[in-house]
Length: 222
Ligand SMILES: Cc1cc2nc3c(=O)[nH]c(=O)nc-3n(C[C@H](O)[C@H](O)[C@H](O)COP(=O)(O)O)c2cc1C
Figure (tube, rainbow, N blue to C red):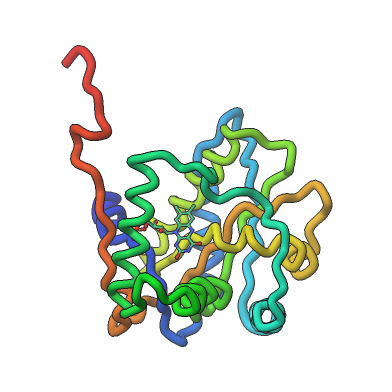
């Protein structure tokens, strides 16, 4: 598969098949992804990979907490509280398209929360990844981890797999600290579901928009 094909076929998948991903495949993808660049070659990422019992234990724990109304102090603000346009509109358009697709009306808050909670089942993916950094890290290192994550998402495509990067997991720092035995200086940045796409799931028909070239590129001196 060409890189361009991996890029164009990558999308966020939010419903996976109940089909296991062999350990060797996960190892191969992570081994290849580690060639991601990082400023000063810090390689500021560590990854926890969960499947089977540890994954089930985490999902069950959060399920109980959600039903009991437990809320944790999020690890960080996923979005700025006062998000400005055009970013605010883009986020709204994406959310609306997703809820329209699955038939959740604008005013149906419980329906929206139910969909949000699907994050915490990794959308039924058989494998969940967590990306962790040292708390000392700065903006540059978060970009590094993003590049590492993109490598994983593109390599997944090469192997017929799909992914969903998940900042939603930043809502559960205490629970994840316990389940992953994180040290105080370790910070949970992002989760990622990985598995085989459910081709029949309506939610996987969501095609997100992108701005036109002129809207985000300024050419100088051409
Ligand atoms: C770092 C990161 C975190 C994300 N977190 C979530 C998440 O928690 N839940 C979710 O459903 N989608 C999440 N997404 C997916 C985005 O909504 C998605 O990438 C965007 O709408 C563009 O769609 P596409 O990935 O299908 O091209 C995340 C994406 C990124 C890059």
